[in-house]
Image (spheres, rainbow, N blue to C red):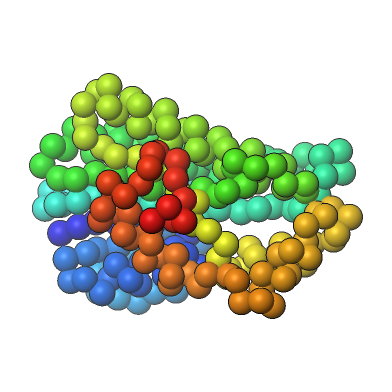
Length: 242
């Protein structure tokens, strides 16, 4: 069997990936999110609130089972938040803590436990796919926490891949920007105050002009990367490259 651990699987890209993968009888999916929105015999849900670091740490062992029959084990760190859109100096300090907890700290904990559990398994393929953003490569006003957290996720991925290569484990790590997808996050962006995000009209235009990719389209590209990792140009990559 092939096992996929997907965070944020209750909606958006995470849900689209889970549903696409479950079409193959050789795939099992463990969805990790606050709510379960998928019912399937090969789907298991682990409830976790990623803003509750203590709760995540206490329940993390429930996510990473031994999986003795695994041919492939893939972790997809998909869950992420943009937080409150606003300028540094005009934001609540708790905002930065929340965004970094969900976008960096929890993915790092998941990667750490994944590698502790499976990096010595030479009998199956193992891969970590972190869902990043082009915002990790380019600053956007009002998005300081989000941009910085995604940049941190990119570097975390690059460091993890370097270490796995030096250890010779065979684990592959990617940090992939999925493109501009029609999700709840995009709706939040479109509602931002122009004084706190000067490019808001551009994102409103993406919606009205039909320029947003569907979660299903983006999911297929991520799944292609999982099945054909050679298509990536490096650890940090974009679906636009393949």
